[in-house]
Image: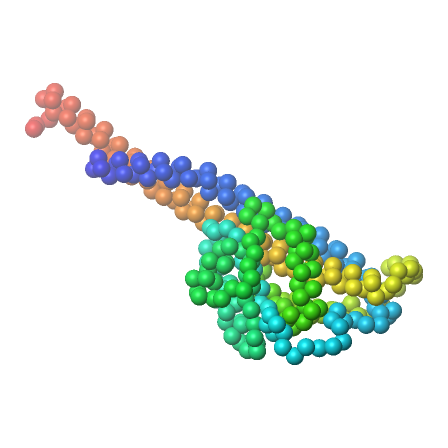
Length: 296
């Protein structure tokens, strides 16, 4: 019984020591989760303004293609680039494993002539390497904060240069995206070639939202600048959705771990209190027996 008491006491001390860590991780995950959602909401307002400008510019555009007119038959890199975006840190359950399995299944369904797998997030990279996936390009994600727009813009500028040089024909983004609450789901997005939304190419129904536009710069230059920003915004939104899904998953797991720890603490306290009562009863019996009040 003494061994059971000491073991229960030791386990109780250990769990109490990690409880502040669980609470801190849960709080940090919730903060990063909300930060990603707040940035997503702000990005949507920027998108609306860009869409409004596009509607004014499109009637004056002569060429809406990024690539030159001449075409190459076989891209030197691959026909399609599949960029899978995972997590940089652990403690998020099967977040990266499920993403990798869904991504590989999706790639198999597409039947690309040639393709390369790119990956972002060291935890995802390890998972893909464990599955023997050949990764042609990889890049880490921020470990302590959500991604920045500057990083997204820098990446998309490099990819646009490769795309315009016909190094590849398509670029797809694969990620886990936040759903309702702490749930997330598998998502894909074709980033390049960039496709305008149908609503952006239709005339504005309410023409009184803005005064008549005065275009002093070259419309083509404005168009290309807006499209570059829109591509970067699309990629940045995917990064934020993935980050929100990751942190929501981690928050949920930390909450479950804290609830489980509280249940264990309650059970261990019950064991310890029962053992203490047993010891007190035993001591009382020994005292009474020593005083001759009880038979041996």
